[in-house]
Length: 310
Image (tube, rainbow, N blue to C red; front, side, top):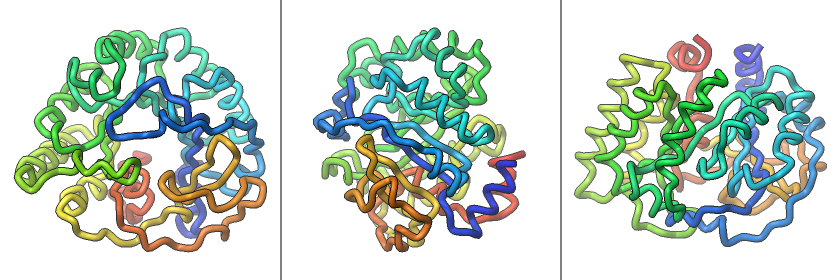
């Protein structure tokens, strides 16, 4: 079902991935994100029309911190009732994640929990502004693994000062029996250039990406990021423009107040109720290599189908 839908949406130029910011509120104060400073009113949105029109493969629930929204299970239940086959995932910092909360989300219809982890130990706590967060994450993962989610994964951002830690985080995911996905830092969120990979660290970046690719070759299921995405990380950080962004075409985002955006870093362009498949024209932006962007434009070939479905 999802495989045929993937090809349908690729050739129909319909969104494969629908991202829903269920809230802008956040209990973290991450150094590379200003979302926690925003105050955007949340609105109950009827997603049935959108789901019927798009038939996305993946719906990701993001924030802010999604677990701050008290009616999150009800949101998931509606999404699942509207489409029994869609893959529903959530990205969380993990501070509010418990076994009982994970069980509630799974019973509502959640497939995957993705937990942000960019450093090991106290450094991760400092980066996210939540004391004890790293210890909490490592404690809760073995507990929620017993629930047999389709996937539990680390979501790790590639930045200038964590290149030495990324191989260790990958091996930690392997030891915990979970998966890992990568994204590349961009200063678009708060214009902070400090986290971009510096020239003196380019060789280290290349070795890090080579390590990830080697591990992916050995264990395809361990690393969710596509080879296409990973192979372009180095090009992005040396300033090469990677064309063919599919924001608004294969990737769209809904804000907590019911607006539609082609991506999280663009201004709102239409209301949910007035959105159609032709609402967004192709974008020429090359300013990021977020995973949402890179994976949405990954070319169709046997390797990609194997990564997704086999």
